[in-house]
Each structure stands twice: as structure tokens, then as C-alpha cells.
Image 1: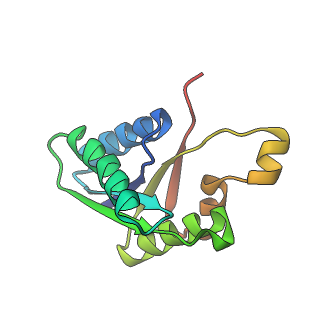
Image 2 (image 1 turned 120 degrees about the vertical axis):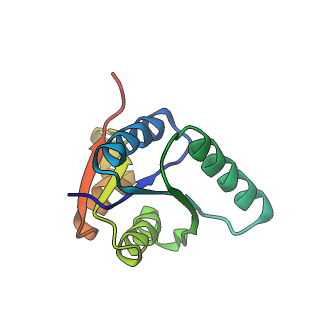
Length: 135
């Protein structure tokens, strides 16, 4: 069913849980796994930090064909910029399943800040698995 799976990571525990779910699904379907991380500053420090997150993610996955991608978002559009670059990567790579962690914001914080995961649901045409934080 799934040939190409993408997981977005940000170094958080929820993103690690999403990566573990993506790895399990990729193993079950013998699918390729693409790991993406979005940076918002095109600086040496930003790229170095982003590559560190990708390296940690890559090192935690065993036995799969993995690609990693560092993406740059324009925050002029707020969190929308992050969801736009992930959505474009999903389309460009013909991804069958996108796996993302969700921050599980509530109330005013959700209204003001919104959610990258929530925005992705409305933008990505592929299937999406949202992984909630552990309670």
C-alpha cells in the first residue's frame, strides 16, 4: 500500500515517536523512508542545527533505505511557511504517507499559533498519520 513514506522531525519527543511509527510502517510495507527537517534561518548555525536533528533521526533508524532532506521555510507567512515546504516536498517525492507529530495545543494557544500538522492536513493530498504526544 505504501511505497514512499515521509516523516517530519524537529528533535522533539513527539517527532521521535512519529519517526518510530514511520519506521514500523516502512518495515511492514518494505517502503522507502524520507526524513525531513525544516529550518527557518538560512545561516550556518541554522543548517548545522538542522543537520544535527537529521543525523540523530537517521542514526535511530535501522534496516531501511533512508533519505534525509533539510528544507528552508520562509516565516514571513508564519507557520504556514513550514507547512508549505513540507507539502511541496511530499508532492515532489510522490509520497504515499506523511507522518508528523502534533503538539496537541489547546485553547487560545491553538487559536493564535495554529498547528503545522493541522495545516498539513488541509494541504497534502497524500495520507497523513498524526502522532500525538504521550500523556
